[in-house]
Length: 252
Ligand SMILES: NC(=O)c1ccc[n+]([C@@H]2O[C@H](COP(=O)([O-])OP(=O)(O)OC[C@H]3O[C@@H](n4cnc5c(N)ncnc54)[C@H](OP(=O)(O)O)[C@@H]3O)[C@@H](O)[C@H]2O)c1
Image 1: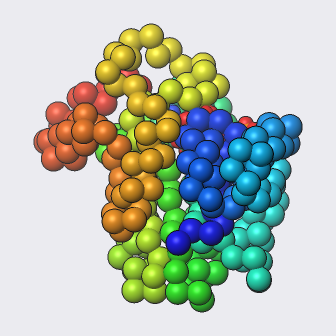
Image 2: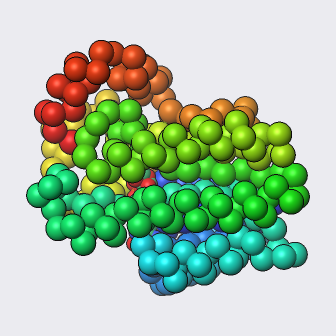
């Protein structure tokens, strides 16, 4: 049973959907993001609505100090975290090679270094207790070559698959959650042009979080919410590499 979950990026989008769903189930929360006002607002709302404890950590996970703050909480003796949701993320606009390399560094730190450190801290703390869950929010983008964002998500999928095998014996389930297009603040923040994305391709963040938690209970290493994306993902994973590369070339 999950008593306390730590969620990064819990003030908006998919992370916020996890926070609301877990609070509804009576799970105490530790929520992380950069904007304190928004964190406090979410915390107050969930405490009032569901009577759960909600602790707030303001941290920029693209920095080593921010990561340390959250890692320290994950390994704190006497206050165990049963579920880590490594969700915080953002993407630079533009393709690798045309973007500012400093932006690429920040994206790498947020999408790879932060989940790596937090997963390391969580595994160390959870294996001592013989139970725990980790959800790493990746993307269906992990299954097609599309610039550095998809490469970072592919890294997360690969490590999660291995960690789920490696640590299931000590009671830890590790999942890579791979959603498709989901209505959140993500695309607006990166100023992406999403006008061409057909309506049927959009998922609701609430449904993504619920599907992931259901798959976690089943011990699944990869969770792809919705039938339509299960089909698309199967095609992109098993189609000839040249065909996948050709489709990927057409745009984000
Ligand atoms: N939306 C999609 O279509 C989609 C599809 C597949 C995968 N994903 C993945 O899903 C995850 C969540 O994305 P979302 O769509 O829910 O995005 P979102 O609506 O933009 O929410 C992002 C959350 O992360 C926090 N955050 C951003 N940068 C941070 C930093 N440097 N340090 C700490 N917290 C930070 C934000 O709060 P602050 O700004 O206050 O820090 C916010 O709470 C990401 O990993 C993304 O790659 C999204």
